[in-house]
Length: 484
Image (cartoon, rainbow, N blue to C red; front, side, top):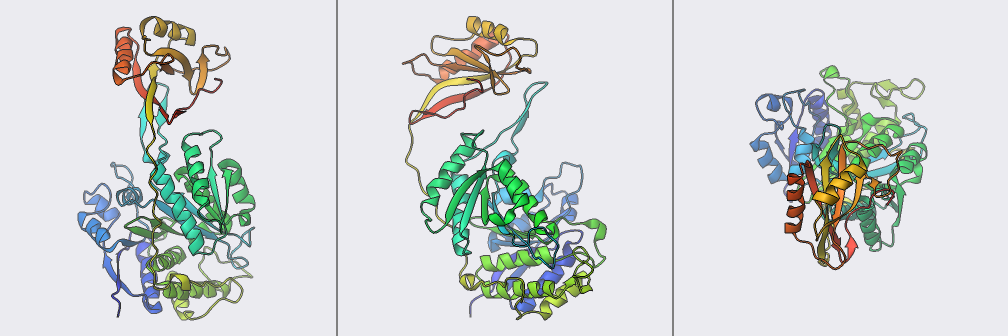
């Protein structure tokens, strides 16, 4: 007999213990073969002095079991407390956030009765790397980090997910018409990897119009893969238009550890009142069971949940006169699901998870790219000066800063070229990007850049950061100023 699958489980805060109790009862009744290690996370742990809301013992459990079923937690306000979800995702490399967004019409009200879309969001990088700086009195920045390995992992996972789940189409949503290097790399990788999956239709869409179409005609989408920030926004849009954000499950998938949770919060205002809807966590447990290869149990639970919805046994948040038959509490809803184990829905599409029965999901392998020739060809020097004009600043840089190796080529302000040949109508703030590049035929070294910075210091020019300008196999690895 195979050994039970070890998992780590946390009851969380607020409504967390209530909905976790119901979920565990359903898992046991359905025959899930689990060895559960309970860990404590959240508010009590924060207040005990752990700023991330998790102890070393909990970390040890997660590394050992590699599967985490998590109820919602409460992060105390103030006090420098860190988001536990962000900490767990980044520490354990949970690179893929997976959110199914499904319509349960006519039992749950929605304008989109045929909606069945999965949002697969990169989970670790992009603007969510959280690298921010205040650089001048007027300007702050947040670095958008898109990496090739991070993009390849999430795109390959999306295609593998689509094939495993009999999905026919993947749409990448990006903003590569503006962010040609960062989002542009994501799109190029998407098209490269799509060629390996000829059975799956692949297309791309600019995220602004994509979000509009997702809100208006979500049934045109199947699987959406996207960088972190866009995915965060799109997944909430999709959950809301499907009918109820409170029903949504979520998986956070890593190469070694994965976490499964409801998408809603801990709702402390209704804790202990037997009115919380456990559906999000129940469906997250279904995702967990499929992930660990217990697809037969996942199918039993999911179909039983669908039958419960069909029969009008509803929690207060989705209860509707004329549609719902019985308004039930948290515990009673769980008992209804247990009572329907072994049944299949008659109106809503039933679930068949036979493909994931007995076989845990295997992560797709990443490829290794041939090394590229990287050459330093210049530097962008960012300068803080609230009292200058583009021409005045250029005059000082030409006279006191540029060298024989690095010549001043351009000044931009907020990404728009203001020198040479700038427009007088362009608004400028105190944050200037000054581009120095080599004359034709000269090589650039770090010593050349240090000379430029030393010249700035001697001229009393306040430089605040630099960015090296590199080419890769002769292609520029940097953006041009708007208007250039």
